[in-house]
Structure formats: C-alpha cells, structure tokens
Amino acid sequence: MTDILAPTISSPSAASTAVPQERLILTAIPGPKSLALHARRLKVVPVGVSTTLPVYIDRAHGAIAIDVDGNQFIDLGAGIGVTTIGHTNDAVVAAATEQLQKLTHTLFTITPYESYVRVAEYLAEHTPGDFAKKTVLVNSGAEAVENGVKIARKYTGRNGVAVLEHAYHGRTNLTMAMNFKAAPYATGFGPLAGDVYRAPNSYPFHDGLSGADAAARTIAYLEKTVGAADLACLVVEPIQGEGGFVVPAAGYLPALQAWCTANGVVFIADEIQSGMARTGVYFASEHFGLVPDMVLSAKGIAGGLPLAGVTGRAEIMDSAQPGGLGGTFGGNPVAAAAAAAVFEQIDSHNLLAEATRIEGVLKTGLEALQKKYAVIGDVRGIGAMIAVELVEAGTPKPNAAAVSAIAAYAAQHGVLLLTAGTYGNVLRFLPSLAISNELLEDALGVIGDAFATL
Ligand SMILES: *Cc1c(COP(=O)(O)O)cnc(C)c1O
Image (spheres, rainbow, N blue to C red):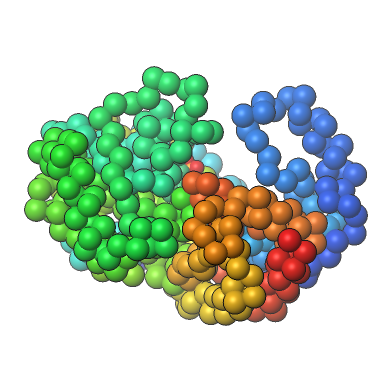
C-alpha cells in the first residue's frame, strides 16, 4: 500500500494539550453557560432532535470531554462508539487537517481521488473473508444499511429483508421499518417500507436457549412467514447495539449464516456499532466465526467525521449498475483521509489489545458490583462494548428507573454514561480505546457510589 496519505504533521493536536485526562466538576450540571446555550437551542432546534444531557461540549481529547463551563467528563460513550480511538486523535486530526488544505470535494463519481480507494483497500483487508471484496462509501450508518439492502435485492432479484428482534438500523424510511422499536423511531412517520420481516433473536439472559435452538426458532419463523425463496438478505448486528449489547448464544449466528448460504440469501453483518476494533478484533463477526457476504461500517470508522461503508463480495457489489450507487458527499476526501488514519493507528499501535484490556477492567468492576446489588441482572459484552442489564431484584423484569437514576448520578459526578435496551434498562459502556485504567477505575468508583445511593 502507498504512503501518500500518511500524515506528515506529527505535532499533537491543539486539543491534546488543552484537555487534561482527569475528571473535574466545577459547577452544577448543567452549568450556567450550558443552560444559556440550551435556551437558545430550544428556540431553533426541533424537539425531535432530543438531548440526553444538555451539557454543551467545547473540546475533547482522548477519553475526556470538557464542557463550556470547564467541567471535565470521563466519556464512557465516545459519541455512541464513534471516537473509538479517542477524541481528537492526533494522527486523525493531522490527516484531516492536511487533506483540508489540499482538496475538500470533487464528487468521487465524477473525478475520483486516492483516499476513497485507500479506505476501500483497508476494508477489503480487514473485514472477514479471503475473497475479492469491493466497497461503496456513503455518509451515515443508515445510508449504508439502505445501500446494503439495495445491492442484495439487485443481486438476488428478490425483495424480502429479514431482521431480528431488538435490532436497530437507523432513522431513514427503509431503516425505520427494520428497527424493533416503533417508538420513538417510527411513530407517526409512516407509511413504512414493506417486505421487512422481523424474526426472533437469541437473547440468552431472557430466552435461555442454546444457539442451535434459538437459530432453529429464527429459521422456522422466516421459513413460515416469508420463505427463503423470497428473501434477498438477512441483516444482523453480531452484537446488538441499541438493543442492549445482546451477545447471541454460541452457534446461533453461524447457523443463520449457513442457512442463508444454503438458500441464496445474502448474509449482511451490520457492524456499524460493533466494528472498527471496538470488541478487540476489527469486526465482531470474527468472535463468532462468521464470514458475512457484506459488512456495514460507520460510527468509529473516521474518528468522528461522517463516513460509512458497504463492503461485500465483489460479485455481489458489482451487481448494481453504473450510476446506481453513490451520492454527492459519499466518501468525502477529508472523512476518507481521517478513516485511513484510523486504520493506520489501529494497526500501528495494536489498538485491538486495548479493547481487551478495557474489557478486563470493566467486567471485573461490574461483576463485583453485581455481587453486591441484586438490581444488576446481567453483565455482558466483549471488548470495549460492555453492558449491564438492570432488573427488579430477583426477577428478569426491566428496571428502567434504576438505569435513569444511575446515568443521572454519573453525569452529576463527571461521568458520561449511555443507556440502551428495548426497555431502556441497560447501561452501556462504549469508552474509547484511549481510556486509561486509572480513568476506568475512577468512573467505576462513581458508578459504584451511584448504585449505593439507589
Ligand atoms: C448507529 C447505528 C446505525 C445507524 O447509523 P447512523 O449513522 O446513525 O445512521 C445502524 N446500525 C447500527 C447497529 C447502529 O448502531
């Protein structure tokens, strides 16, 4: 591979010197400047764009975000798994800055440029499978899902799209129909796209099924309600994101893939949240021995810049006719340069190992809390993608109130902690791979205090 895009600027980004890696709370949360900004926002931004925590962030680096009032938060969400290699990573900032000075846009489908090709090469190399692969770059995760489905339909000549319970795939028209939760993603926004079939998934904490039994249930459902002959694709998140970091039982996903392969159904892994080094491998499919026909990436791919990709078997990807794929901003040069730097950083700094380190610290801390607090029903996940499902003590019943209380306490004490789950009863930990053990332990201390005050 060429080195044309290797960043030549090696000095640290401005943010790296201006953001100490420590937690510090100076004001009430939200502070006065955040409250003033929020009042402005409420007048001009619609309520549909909701806000979990009206704390306005001014700058960030590594695992710390600083708000406009000077409060320093340990960021356990990384913008929902986007700044995976750390906020304002020096190499990503350098690559994007250099690209900004050279070229910001041509439209790849008119006159192309190298960074797009380079990202496609990286994706071909790092997604599972040793066959020829091709990639189309787009702007968002939902757009990647849309394109994956489009291509699978063209390739198979079939219409049906199968998804799983508790799935989340986006907020565009097609993806609204593919999500499990209607509210808030689809309520009132119909008509929804047709030919989408939602099958039961594997959720070991609740269904107690083996992978083989759960797969037999999923397959029986699909054969009965749609029939393999009418299915273009099955779209799965190897570890479900929004649904609450549901890790399927061993053998479940390979059985689904085998059924897809036997029936000519394109097997698509939505790795938008679970991919890009998040779980200690490039793509979580590897943990399950999957070799998807198509892999969707977005979120962590470009260090915070908007970019997404559909990578698949060359013969599937080439079934779309010239002009059928693309869009004005898809694979923007600045975002693509940032993405190339992300891949380069993961490879040269062995960041996959950081995800495994983080899993060790988080699971040890959270499992110790589970022994103390009966509201913690399940601790699960892989790498830097860990979840805690809260229940009413001694039952499997969801406890969303406890999740809200813990997240609110954490925010007040300088820890940004995300929630998830179909019933809002899951705390999700998606720290950046740049977070130190010291910061993780500090955050776990705050979360322990939060459980103690429940
Ligand atoms: C976030 C997400 C999407 C949608 O991505 P956007 O960039 O928000 O459109 C799709 N699938 C999964 C698994 C996601 O986590």
